Image (cartoon, rainbow, N blue to C red; front, side, top):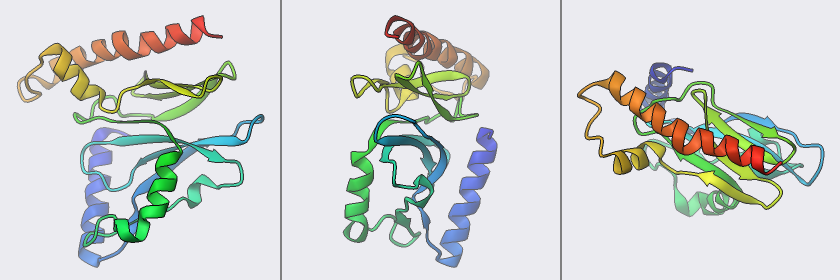
Length: 191
């Protein structure tokens, strides 16, 4: 899904729920990985109500839980009512293993999770690896909450309004060097 489609879809959902006073799920189920061994499966969720900054969350769920049934109520008037949803939110947060969002909306196509070598759960989007969870040691080995912000902080880049193509190229090079290549090296070294 392209960023324009994500933004348009998010705007339609937001405006529809705001106008009609409906409720929606705060998280959108995207996909799951069923694992033959162990007690868990893994699911990828997208930010269900974000406007313009696509968010991605990977959770570890007990095998008896259907990821498409996980629901956290959100309404335009209340947002997430923490008084009502506190237990569900805490339950969901306890299961998060990888999470990030992209403030610039770059490299957001084809988000997916996969398991490599029966050990490494990898989150990718836009053709790059963005996160790695090592199943053997139960650790988020690579997990930057906001890669774009970290890139801006470390690179000194000032603003996307100057040259969007230049920004995308520079950010892509940073992702390749600081995330994608390091994740691939870790996988190769830790088979």
